[in-house]
Image (cartoon, rainbow, N blue to C red; front, side, top):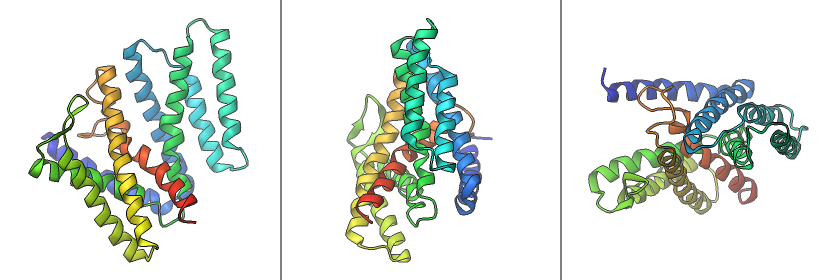
Length: 258
């Protein structure tokens, strides 16, 4: 079976599963995000180990569990979760000589980068904006790919991702605008200009999320974060854009579209 066929089949199965989880919501959504967080966190820690960093896996998983608990029990404030995690990490360098300040800093970064940002999807539950996280991220990626292949000439970031082009990037933004306008008209979300602005900002940051993951992989000298998704790589390879789009859409809708 070719890589393209594997990619299409796994992508279709993943999309069906994603829609099912989003529609059901609740604990299914929370624990699905938790599983993705644990896998993604492990992928991130494994990658940065190639840069002579020794992350503290246990504390990382503890942090992901704390973010889950905050989602299930909102009375457990996220500030409390991170206060506990920071105190535990600072205690680690006292208790164990195995870890340095650089190691615990990278451990904390992993908690913020993967579970904390990813769980903003759950914060959008039961709102009409939830699906925009995926519409913009996947739409940007799809339009950028096809427009880049058809009209791409000028490289966007050749040292990070040689295949990405400026034309593809612009195409991804325009494609995102079209999808968001259609979605907004269908669900009568207003004002439309604000939704267009949201699509532009989020599409740009979606691409930044992709480039960030690519940069981390280059620093770590790996091709993919993992192989759990046939044809797509690891969790971070597939959700690198989502990690950036979810918090942007959450805070934009909370602050501007209130």
